[in-house]
Image (cartoon, rainbow, N blue to C red; front, side, top):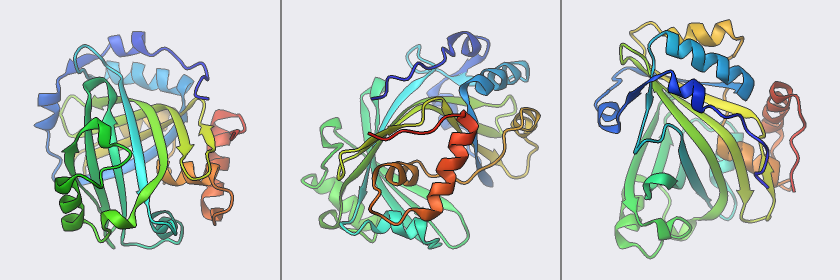
Length: 265
């Protein structure tokens, strides 16, 4: 279903200098603030042009400046992870496997949000073959038990999200920017699929003590902050039987930005 024609960003990305994965790993944002934004592919081209002018660099891995990501989110039979988010529970968790497709690497990841609004992430490497089921992997299940209140027996594959990611770093190395395009969702429990067409989700991770050039760029292009979860949007679009009211307004916001109704099959 993910056959919507997407923008070619290769020329725009070619104007940015490269940064290696090793350099990226060395950038530590100790007082980090994370903010998400929503826009479309046409606006992203303009943002990338401004970023190049301001000295941003783009992550390049094995010659590729756009990474392919595939994530499988796990949830309980009663969809506790999704409903905790929907019901505004401050302390919550998400469990997923994530594959960096071009690099052939996969991880089991546990994301935890505390009552201060801070998110932490723990992860462990797993074989790509365990993306859909890591429950027979003793090391992975022990990691889950140590860092999550869920056990492997509690969780089942819920939804898949796949997307293309561009990662930028500013010249002063005080902020990172992840830019996700070609977002596609598949629900394992209902069999339904959905695409966000030309929508773009941007996440700005910045040092809270430093000024942000990107905030100015986004403001100039009228790109506004938005709270959005890929997993929650995926479930909202593909599981009509669940309570999804709070996230339906997010879907309407996306449709307004891309000027198109999102279809589910």
